[in-house]
Length: 502
View 1 (tube, rainbow, N blue to C red):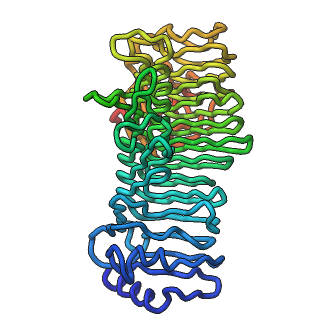
View 2: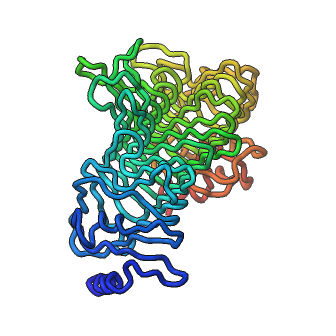
View 3: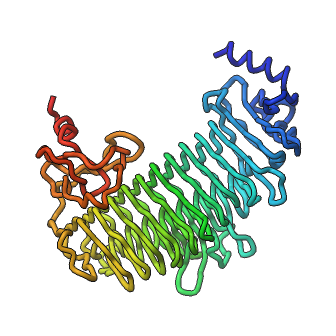
């Protein structure tokens, strides 16, 4: 390790600020100081408004975080990379109330990459607590980055977006963690709820891709006394507003747990959960596409859509595939997924379990698992395990619903037209608790002999399950492969070993 660091220091002295043909300019951070030569702040200040790619890299001894004590220079230059790989991801940049990385709206930066480090405790009034990219022409890539306790604040004059990350242009997030990031009211008296995306927000006609990432305990939490009650913004973890027919939002292989929207009225001493749409994510587009595939949502709380909300997005196309929704709650409706004035939707091979709508003890007719209002819905090979006494498993209004081979735990999912291939099974005691059976997200395995195994519609089955295992497989051992219902595809051999056969 010392040999490698020593070599890095030599490179820093020999090549910092020197362009080599075909290679980027490399600026080395050689200490964890908050200012002066070799500091991160100094490296940002050394960036030049040039077309040649530039990299900020790190090579210093010790484990102290880089602690900022004031504002730092914004990113300049066409192509900039900030990468902690030389220190195996041990770089921690503590904003201490200042945003660590920003791109101005009039910047010449066309690409920004941040990789292999941790950003924590950045703050700003407005957009992007730790990373704020305000130029719609900048492509932002985030790879193996951890964001902790980053914050944005809203006041009566300034909307807030993205507690950890805001991107006005195309955004790619991969293999990253967002934990305890927030969008908050500045003070306790601003009469506004214009704060969205406790962890991440992106707005504009472009593409956003989120893959293999974890969003845990992020929130939008506001103080106000708006006319009817206190109100929160939308998207406890993620807020995407992607207008335009060519805009695509993709969330795959990712986990959302404990995210929420909440508020408090000034003068009270209690919080109210679920006062903004989309406890985990609020996704909106007037004509674009959202692909939500192979994800796990648990214990998220929102107003309409405890996990996901699609609101006022009538021409949007939504594909929700191979995802698991467990113990989420929508206070007004839709513990799992809320569709309101939306859309053209496909929900195929998902598992909904113990999601709830409403407040404890009050009956709510608006869909514990999901609600669709306006538009069309294709509902195929889904498990709807409704364990709530307060609300039915699902609700439909004004929508065209086509369904096939779904399993319901009770008769509280009335379809507009009878569907003889979908079954009411009674209590789903055969549905196992969430566990890791490989790949990126938890799944809920059905016990051997459960009606979900080999019980699906082969013609409309997804090609792969939540673990990227090919479908269909022979799950019951009868020699024939058929699609399973739900997010997990079982094989008979897999079942033998899972049950302890050796």
